[in-house]
Length: 258
Image (tube, rainbow, N blue to C red; front, side):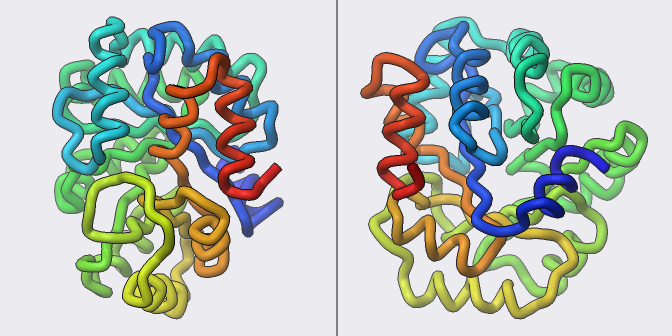
């Protein structure tokens, strides 16, 4: 049983997953950010690969990618840093990034290195499902690394069922057909969407992301899924606090989980 499976078996609800862009605000912050998040009781960490054209991300995460690239962050360096952090961290670590940097690194080489350094799953927002089934699922099976797929309000029930059947880890529910960012609350339409997915009786656990930024959005995400994914709000906390520990405390205070 891998770390993700253990998390969902042992906890299952009110899971908090936090995203940050590796190399932001400084190139060598990755290890300390991972350790600060793990020590605080966060359940899962998504380590973002900076990219020059992150189409699913809003201005906060786009800005963090720009800074990280200027700082000299690369995918190879990121994986070296994860390896260093893993020695003191036993919670699930998920690598999240776009296809272009991964292809430049080498896909099978990436799977090999992720397995070696202790990455538990991958998220690739711009990877089409058909491409996944043909070229990536065999690698997922070979290396025991699930590839987590995103669904949106526009994803058909048929495609959701296919993702549930053929993908692992968890299903990433994108709260709206928009880019990442913070929101004050979810609309009635979004809540109906969460209820609809919840009623499908899917086999995979689900986490809701995009727009989780305060106690009400965090509680709503936990009500209709196994938990929430927070990114932009934590990037903002890293910007305005002097240390990773202070940024994590800021985040947990902001969402009412201290």
